[in-house]
Length: 266
Image (cartoon, rainbow, N blue to C red):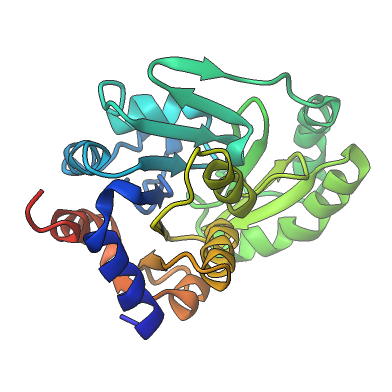
């Protein structure tokens, strides 16, 4: 634990009722699996979040997945006080109510062009597209050489994103085409700013490159006087997050263990 992270943890424990706790989903609360549709939260994740939601100002899951899928796959439907921000903050689920904006036209254009683009790039047949409605994720995890396949597609997908007004979000053996203007850092800052009271402390736990922006938001809040903690759900696939984290734990299992110890008397 870094000194700044230790201060953030102490602030959460000193005033949990004022703390905002944020979490990524895939790779943080749920193990990474070859088929994204088969992902489910660690069995201990929902109970741990429920306990924390009852004692803190807010618990928020910020994910690139559609919010409704994260709620379903996480088993979060019955957790009072939990908010799920899907599609990097474009969607919001809270108390059973889901808010979903219309996708920008660029998503439909990219959806129509993507099969031809992948064929022209010689994408391996194991490459598959996850249609998230507001975004399109191209996965190479099932390929025989997933890293090689990902690099082969990086340039041509960037060109497609530019033509359709989207951006490319890299991740763990995935490249996602999504609308610009929102990321997990902005989602976290907006969520904090939208609350009636300034938080006593803030925490964010993630595992992938898309979570770097949320780490940046925690660092910005620290500079403004709000203690904070960044937690990396460690993996061999991504090291950039570990280099920025206050604390590294061993995957979703480690995240759940950390949550159980976060407020020892909870």
